[in-house]
Amino acid sequence: VVVGAGLAGLLASLYMRRRGKDVVITDIRDDPRIAQLQHVESAMGKHKMDGMGKLGNATRRSINLALSARGLRALRKAGLDEDVLADAVQMNGRMIHDLKGNTTLQLYGDSADEALYSVSRDAMTRYLVDHLTAPATEGEGAVDVRFRCKCTAISADGIVTLQCPDGTHQCPSQVVIGADGIFSVTRRELSRHTRMNLFQEYIEHGYIEVGMPPSVDGDFRLDPHALHIWPRHDFMLIALPNVDRSFTGTLFAPWDVLAKLENPEYAVQWFREQFPDAVDLVPSLARALSTNVRGALATVKCSPWHANGRILLIGDAAHSVVPFYGQGMNCCFEDCLVLDEAFELARGDWSVALPLFFNARKSACDALAELSLGNYIEMRSRTASRWFVLKGHVDRALHRVFPSWHSSLHSAVCSSHLEYDEALATCRWQDRVLTQCALATLGLAGAAAYLALARTRARW
Image 1: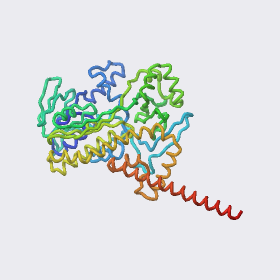
Image 2: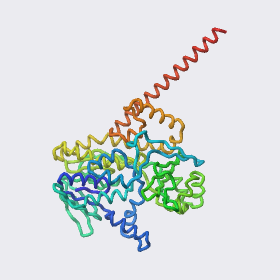
Image 3: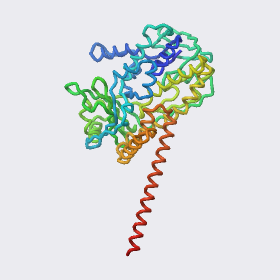
Image 4: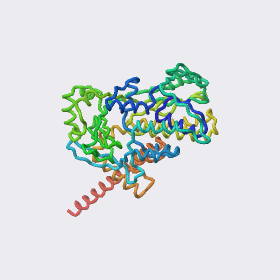
């Protein structure tokens, strides 16, 4: 049984199905394909969306997703990568917007392999549901997808209690995989069966999403092959391209700033001062800033992720991170890949596979939490620094001469297959080497200048 039909739960189910396992996957939300149809009909004025309220709208106000090499590798193993890329927009770097509206492109790297791909969370979810519910081929297991069913309890021996529209059901299972997100019910139930340590921390910043539609002639209004950033030190605006030639804008700021933006007049004036070249990109700017839903951002860590060889957490249920490295989806997909590999190594024995998976992923995912928080500072502040740009040029030059040298921490995290903790440690070592070389160079330059001065004085 897989609890949670988000991205991690769907891909994990697809992997298991292809190994011949029968899968029951359940989610409290509506079938995303039906929810999308209702949204389209509502937009056409046929009727208002009903039923799930804020839950039903949750995916449409989620931050855009940036697909990178890690996520692509997991999709490739399932044979899905080419179709996903066909519906994505390639981003080759960060386009930095200063206060005067000037722009500077900071490439992620010299290779196309270092690009990110902007994808729709809704479209990705519907695509995975479609593949999971397609007729099984020879050797594949059966899949039973149950939407609008709430997991209310999980026993130590893997019996899942579901509350569905047609009543309460008991689902026995060999293993229960909890992929039900940051507010995981599976995690709560797992804590009843093991001594779990849990850490949850909200940051002092939230976010607002704003739509940036195409131009009148239906084209992109910004360079589509970049992630656009307006860094302002304490806050920032970003924009990611969509295949319909719109952009999804997200404002990240301290909560006290977001509170002030509830005043429409103040909101427009403030936005005009901070992001002058973005004002015309957002229609109904005053209403968008003052009334759009405010989202909170949190980090969750817990340990262990498994118990009794019967219950396991993956994805955000095990390790939720803030979105600033764009690795949430990629990390979840990599979870599915590593779990599949652990199952193979354990020769189908879940009691062996679960601890193998946990030991392989725990340190890496803890490092990603640290990386994600640090990248917020980089995006909103350091990207505007000349020293940051200079260091990027030096790193890329060294990478051309020494291919094992990572062109940036971003490249090591997003474009390599190093575990996140290994990528962090490697790039910290690189930074120490650069610092020592810089100090040595300054020391030699100072010594040379001193000797030159001493010789000049001797001649006097």
